[in-house]
Length: 485
Ligand code: SF4
Image (cartoon, rainbow, N blue to C red; front, top):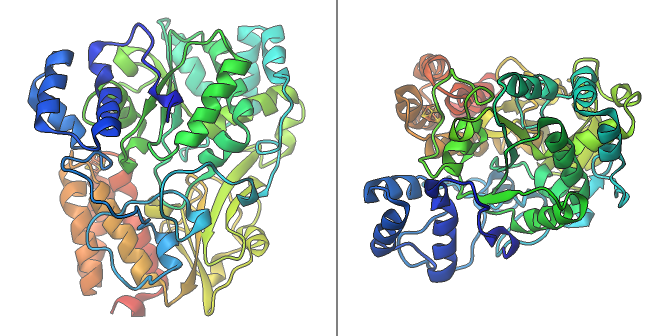
């Protein structure tokens, strides 16, 4: 936590001090008082209501003295390690330590033993940033060409080509902001924490390569509030690999919606973390109105691997998505943890490595609250971007939770529906009103009404959270309708 408490470098507008100041106060006093909100509003020259509006939008901030009891994870994988039949009634806080289920207590570094299979991204690196040296030797334009030609796609879950994003920001012809997205907020996904802890120099070198090509005016690392040890490792690695870079680190306050990059930019700016209406895209007008490149931790980790072997990079993975993917595997398996695997590897092969321990038939939740379930008959699907099954299962951020079917399905589907309802930011009506109704209809077994509402939520919602919220519900009902009757 100490390194993340570094003051913001010069150049950040006053308002963007909101999140760091709130963290500082909660760290000091344990909670946020109305007096503090008034003082902060005065310091940042904002209405008090705007301070409250932003602060109360983050799940991790407290507005009354904290209870003394230990923090216990309520995420799906941890509940599978206990009594999964107890439905969560409110809140769905995940500690993102699904490899250590049932998790409780304070943050701790990602354990090396939970790296079950390492490839080029997770392998221990050398101290010499050879990929950065290659990029510098090539020059900015040729290095951009390498990224474009490589076919490298973002690893946050949307798989947009990284080079195309970079070029679009450069084409704006204005000072650029570069944002490192370490806000890993999906239950069942912990691969960025693994990369930050196990291979921080590789991530730091990737940031330095991107900074060399983009020459950003601002660089921000936005980290999940429960990823402090990993981000401290990254900060130390940046000091070693790229000491001339000025990097601001922000710590989030919880919220799945921060996976939507414009919501994350609002959080950095000290605003309520809700998605912005598009256009403009963040690459056109993002952080403080600057063309903004937001890339995920794993995307940055790919860059030194690419520049370390430009010809060889495409030899791994598929033609459309070269390279490897760090998968997070948890739930009913003997060996939970991260598995680095080539894109296109059959799901079944990965599951065999993890050692399912299901008493009944195996089932998998792929893509978490935005994905869907797969039955035992659907496990030969290759792990590649896009839908793994038309009802919702998807590769997404690479989270796989192994379940026992049909015993776990009802509780797991209800947990995903509850999570989406809790995490809806409330900006648009189909998601705000529809996601709690999806949960309630599923609980009541009203499958006919559920089907129609799922369509409205999918097509009427503004961002991916609402658009993909029906996936777990729809897929569970598709494969195991009897469980909900
Ligand atoms: S879809 Fe949901 S999370 Fe996204 S903007 Fe609408 S209410 Fe917010």
